[in-house]
Image (cartoon, rainbow, N blue to C red; front, side, top):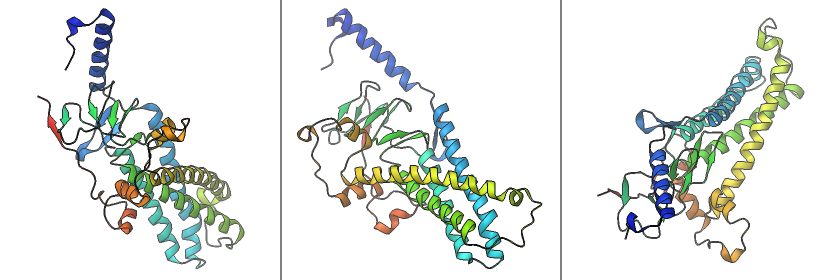
Length: 301
């Protein structure tokens, strides 16, 4: 039963009024810009900067590696066309996963709805939003929203990683790692294996400064490969243990007996993230997430 505000002490009334004002400010926060088709963009300077950096690195490698190496080497019959198709397919899959991870709803919990009786068992209460939320949900201070199964807020995609977009984030790391590894391999072959291009017009900017541009591809490729590999390893490890990054940080300093037990098999945890479809469908960045858990809400009376 809700406590009558006139029965509270002055300190309790002030605290409750402060929480109500804070929750109202959060609900009116203009930080999220909603786009058509259910997409959204977080208006945050730091995240927008990091997202721009990662997008520029992708664009740099996706343009200069084919323009300086793959297409000239194919024209001189040093490589097959399938190499170009593989590289461009990885590039396309990477940018699709990046856009879907950045613009999709990670699993925001509605403000003005409440769960049905069957869904609210063992739910927690957010002291920021003043709403009920499922287990593993957390409040993101940058999005100013509670997110279902929140893993972490990633500035590189300018979005939270939650229940509805974690699978695209993992695919982004996977395809980003494969793309950067392929770019690094092509760099090595370009400098130490392929014959110099005899038909390239050195009057063009990209061929005049070819070595410097390829060094740039090597540096950005190393950065992307390191970031994607470390994050991908962390994601796979946490998912296999049915843990989120937030939970891993919370329980990192606690003894084992104070940590929640892991009752799921690793494959079941992966199916919770990627969906219930065939495992080969998990690698398709164009699909919809299949068989996700549905939470039923009802209007607040």
